[in-house]
Image (cartoon, rainbow, N blue to C red; front, top):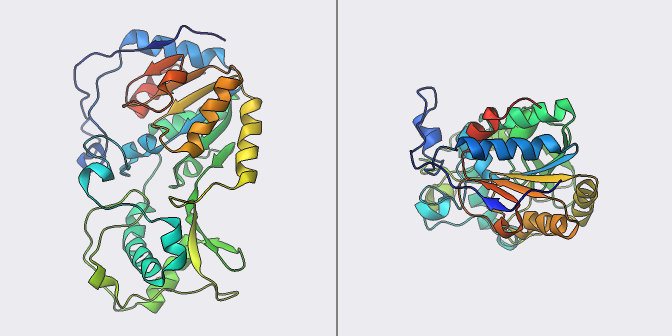
Length: 310
């Protein structure tokens, strides 16, 4: 399958938020143009030609479910605040940093865990059911693909709905840890600020001084969300597994990712080396634009929902 390399320009009319879409959801999605007919036709042709489609999704998919991202122009975390995400080394070496992280996460968890898949997640799940989608790799840690029923799925950076022990390696449910937090901190309260992308909220440091963090019930070890923090690396076994799924595929579609993080970008490099055609659906520019045969700028849910059933 070969297409002429082409970056599609779109109409300048602004995307209109439907009355059923909460303003809070729209506030995390960057402004963009309506996707034109030729753009949709080329993307439809790209997807329809594939028999074993490999999909990579990123934070731009989940912003339409009301979860903010880091890099979106004007609305991402980096644009809204000078705060930065937790670093792996900081979490490991500092008990105070772990206390601060878990206190924020405890406050933010009820809202974060309640987010639901949007229409883009549901379209991708239907593609799996139809046999068109061979494998989906998500860089998101929000479990929305799993909630949508996706089975042929790799959560590249893990999932915040799981907790792991750094001592014994045991895995437990985040909801279970929430109950333990509540039992250990019955009178603790904090005033929350802005929402962050990975499930926590901003609260002042003095508010976390008396927050108590439990240890692993089996070995007494340090508990950490089962995610790849910034500064850490994805497990080699996971990377090899995804490369194997990519080798079995005949086309790659990127949905809602700038691919600025190498852990995801490496698979676009591998696709290029294997001469596997690439299409990208994203609002902004991406690190892999030069590798794409087709680039469509638009909102993930809006565009995917307009494609004809496969």
